[in-house]
Image 1 (cartoon, rainbow, N blue to C red):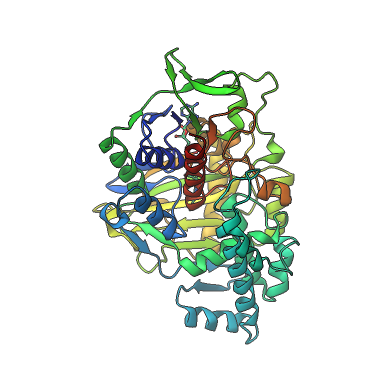
Image 2 (cartoon, rainbow, N blue to C red):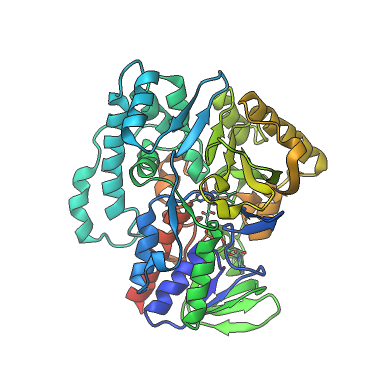
Length: 482
Ligand SMILES: Cc1cc2nc3c(=O)[nH]c(=O)nc-3n(C[C@H](O)[C@H](O)[C@H](O)COP(=O)(O)OP(=O)(O)OC[C@H]3O[C@@H](n4cnc5c(N)ncnc54)[C@H](O)[C@@H]3O)c2cc1C
């Protein structure tokens, strides 16, 4: 029994079905996908959540390990250049996926030196080799896999223990290059000043394996997985919220739906936010994830823009003028920034099938705190929209306000309510400090036998490839226990 048809829930159900389990997925909403969601308007297709996938081999591995070929189901499209970065002082550059071009950019900015970048990537490569055999492959508190031991030789002796920001500042001198690398921790909803340097693996994997789009939108992956599951007899029950995980003798024995229906099961896999499990188990001390422990949420505007946005990059980041201040506002003051960094995704620049006949999809996102009490009424949205548009205008983006023919706004409140995530925290807990970064909720419950966790709120963390890794680990643990 899988609770939730998010990416992790679908992937674990597919892996279990391929190993001969009879699986059922219960999803509280009317469609699978969770945060990997889709919206259509004015002939345009929008991904409402993720817009970039990294580590494509993780996706290929999922299909291969269930006896399929990824390319028979979806088409991954490398995005080139990876992104354009636009700074408040007028500097701008392309983050080219072609190494010679990118080294030329780094040399221009770093006073003729590219050694800092190359050394930083060498650190990232060691961290990747280490993570690939350990953190990405097994859950915390499980017995160590002896085949992972040789990877310990990659353990970096220097620059791995400090703060992420200090490490970036060690390798780069130019404030623009520094700001670009400081942004990567937001891929796990965290602050660069608070996460450990070990997470330097994130910029490495993006550069080493590229950034990818999925033809037709990332939701095509959800459709492919749902189709494979249904073809293999796995039922995805829509509008089926689970109200309770049933337990007997210290073992999960099934679930009870909100309408009272009971579904017995040999194992239960929780794909909803891991912090919700104690409440579903009826624990008296269950409490929602405290705000101080939550990863970032986001404010997303989906705009169908009349005409075409020729000459723009697929991904552009418009940086705020004062990045440390932005993170103080997000994590200390817990408010939407005065001057937000704005990310713009124009998928039709790579994939024209996403555009309508007279309009093009534009996804605009700014980080926001995952608070419970924030009221995202019309006034608050209008003010945030004004700040977002001011940043785009300052960065030279064409004035699009008069060309918006359809709009959908995703506030942290809407993310929280739609997917039942505390405060709309996209990645569950933040990764601040070593304990939070490396000891996320494990993939197997330590007290209730037969209860497993997959998805961004569990180990190894948020983001589409790591969510798929959690499904692999959980399916292996379940199989080992069978
Ligand atoms: C705006 C935004 C931008 C993002 N950008 C990126 C990106 O560029 N790249 C990237 O890799 N990742 C990105 N992510 C993160 C990525 O979407 C997630 O990490 C991933 O999709 C989470 O998958 P999951 O398996 O944790 O499931 P979720 O998507 O969290 O789905 C969980 C499912 O469980 C269901 N559920 C919860 N409780 C119950 C219950 N009691 N009963 C039944 N069903 C229940 C929910 O309805 C939901 O469908 C982004 C996310 C958002 C929101």
